[in-house]
Length: 243
Image (cartoon, rainbow, N blue to C red; front, side, top):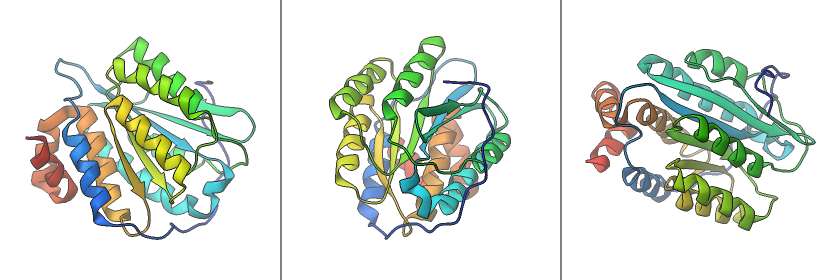
């Protein structure tokens, strides 16, 4: 991966797919509840935000970028969190940003990414996460994608290694592609993370959940408690289940 490549063309228009129900949101919160506190010692939390930018996501791209960018805006307000952006697209293109404490700058960079045709490269994302975790604690990984075109067994082996390193992956799926759902759920299970479908009906809740995961990575239960006092919502539900 190239830590220097940051800028790409602007995204195009789109709308989110059909809605799913509240049970998946509740199940996601249940899984996050069981995730260990991200860090107990001093220092900043570290969150990797990875996304599929292949052409199949084109119809939903602008709306998804808006929601994901708001997660970074929320994160910027609490501090204490370094974030790295990773994305793949096109032919053998997989890029990562440098670690940055300025979440708003990463949000700006994210909105400049557009979709390009190509196969998924989730395996490369997992390999990159493992490399970063070997250099320093990674408190959480958020992944957003809609499909999976790789060997699920190889992905699960890599996910198991991340689980041993204590790196939870929070897998968000756009749409209802069954092969991707199976793979994403298994990656989440093996890493001790959580899975949730990402669609139009749950957009507001998922926006809050993305922010809550980021807050959790930055400061654990205390940061979530502070956020829930200010905004309630999904942060409050998450906090209640973490007790």
